[in-house]
Length: 175
Ligand SMILES: [Zn+2]
Image (cartoon, rainbow, N blue to C red; front, side, top):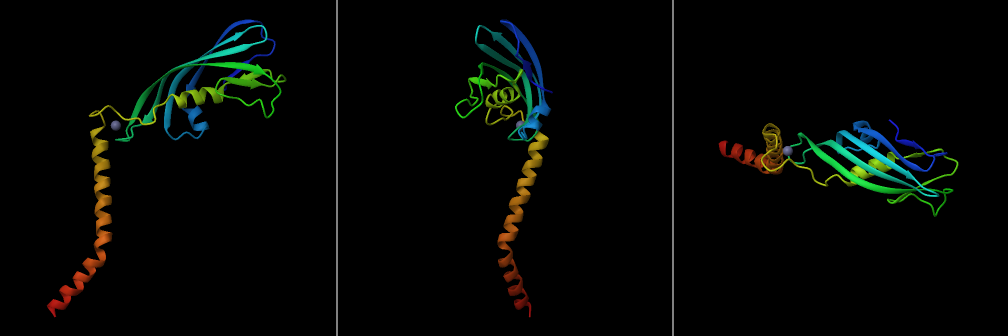
């Protein structure tokens, strides 16, 4: 999937584009948090005399793991952002920022992939959990069992020198 908009030779006016965003975009960026996505990114491109603006609107959902029960859950995605598109020779002083994209005059199109990805990511919550009491009880029970097992193992390891000593003492007593 590409997120490119052809800008060279574009007449002044308003243009609308729509890009579907699926889970593969997140896999491409190595994102481990988002397991799947179903978002529509709408771009309204406005070209005036010597300026260009892109208004980005994303709506849909992403699927992540619940931080508490590790079961899958959907998070709604809804954001808007505006970007100015400037044409300039790329150099040290012309780096992309949150507010604008620099496009080299020789390039015929602008690639919005990074921006769409970034805007989705900054609009995701840092912690994602089901509402209290709505976690998957089976998953919670499994995690609880796993944790209990780990604690038990630690205890056994910690106390093994003493239990070994105790065995010796017991043996000694028997003799
Ligand atoms: Zn949960």
